[in-house]
Amino acid sequence: MNPALIQRTGLWSALPRWAGSIAWFWVWVCAIGLALMVHLAFLVAWPDHFIHEDSAAYIIQTESILRGQYLEDVMKRPYGVAAFLALLSKLFGPHILVFVIAQHLMSVGTALFVAGIVRFAGAPRFFALLAFCLAALHGRIVHYDNTIGAETISNFLVSLAAFIAAGAALRKWPALPSAAAVGLTLGAVMTCRSAAVGQAAVILLWLVVVLDAGLLRRLGVLALAGLLASVVYLTPAAINLAIGKRPVGNETLAVMAFVVGYSGDFEHGVHLDRKAQARGYVEQMRAEDTPRGWPDIEVYQWPFGAMHRLAKAGDSDTDLERVVRDIFVETLTTPSTLYRHLTKHFLREMFFLLFDANSVARRTPSPQGYEFFTERDRFPFFGSPTGLKPGQLIQDDYKPWWPLSRLLPTADQLQLNLNRLFARGYAPSSDLVALCCGVKVSTEYDDRPGVMLWLSSATLVLALVLLIGVPASHAGWVRRSSGRLVAGGTLMILLAMVSAAFPTFLIYGLNRYAYYVIPFLAGSSAILGSVVFDWLRARAGRADRGEA
Image (cartoon, rainbow, N blue to C red):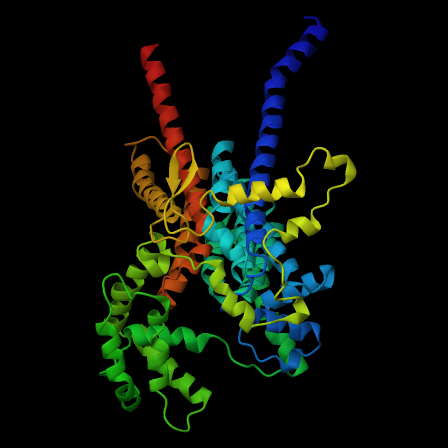
């Protein structure tokens, strides 16, 4: 055959692949651009509401590090977030806007990592794109990206660790370098949020189970990742010990107080004399509980009142912490109180959180409500409050280079586009708002179940499909699903469940804790779509063969 003809034939057969790759490249450019526009819309709509009730602790730590007053720091939060903010300050200058912009960019990165895991699992490109959009465009995600906290960096590092683990297990990346990267990343996330230990355990155990290697190599991977994670996690404590900084405690006492108040036995057990002081208050508050929980966040925090009623005159903080710890351990090791905590508190709060099933879990506070914290916790070192007004960021800073200025919108046009985008379900509203094509959606600020309900429902369906379908496929009753899809779906489900389980078991189902869950619910939902697509495609193939 003519070699020139063969070359032309090969070229024409490759053109559809090239065209498809180019088309998908631009689809992803548009999707990422849309996500960045949504995040930018939040940033310019509320350019001075970057502080919520927990932000001050991280910013005070950061300022202490930057001013060389680290030894005098008296905050009780992990050091990871402050170290990250200090690094940003060294690189780009100590300003609150730098921190918030970094959070918005990391959140988009989190969505890209989740989409990558879905793609590694063998899902078609469309479902990876779907996972990205669900994770990057969720209103609750973007809302909390706009306030300083541990949420954004924690999700970014967890999704990065999961991405590397998925690459090692599903794409045959080198096992030991991947394990080292996973361990370092998990150690970093646990220095930002100690509750991430559950997510770290899920990723490590999943990697060991799914990794295609011998037993000794799997154990080596687990040991290496676990060792490096522990080293990174313990580094701040080692530094404090070396420089003589005394520990100032942590949030353990507050966390234990919730479990003690909600489920502790105040009739029997240890410290009965102290329990008698709090028994009447505890019984009163438990009697006011309803199947739908307490009506607002302030009432939910009543266990703090119970904790203070356990104290006696002359008690130090250490004495009170010892008492609460004793009752906490008693609560979790006594079958009756542990059963009460699981049934009366944990399962209900999990349901509230995952399905937007009560107002405390469902309704995100409007950013205007953060004005109180912005004014109370002033940080002139970081330019907070900024004094910026809505739209001023665009008018002052949007100045494209001359060659691009003719192609890009003007500052007024860009602000108008952001306002229109923001009105599509993101701006505070007590009623349903128009999305497009006649569809109306719930916002994050009304009192209706939102997208969270559908993501959790899809994840529940995927869990049932895997629990029932995998054994049934091994028995030969149904077609076997792709092993990579099963592995990827399992990872997404486990990460979503453990991300919800830790805060709801220890505290309650506050809407902010849904932030840690949403990206992995998005990944699960996309993998469910891929599983259904595979099933429909296989069924259509069988029908075609039957007709033939």
